[in-house]
Length: 103
Image (cartoon, rainbow, N blue to C red; front, side, top):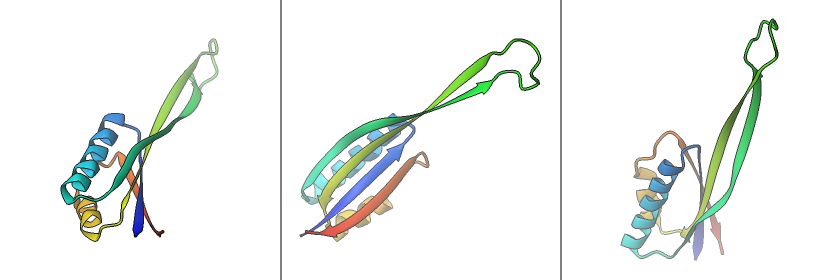
């Protein structure tokens, strides 16, 4: 049977959890086997910038941080389930990648 691996990435963990819950609900309704969602380590990107770009005054810095949350879901590659997942409403903050492999 073929398997589908769904990789989800987002900067907003609440919206990511909502999309994961939708995928789990679709899988339960159709009775396909599901593993996950498996949380992966959160990637933190830090950027340090100067507050005053002119260079006058004392040097003071601000640090900005972007967090990328990731989840992996492995499920049976049922065509009907994959079609429903693709038609589901996904916020623009959530990125979805699907891979289908035969095993």
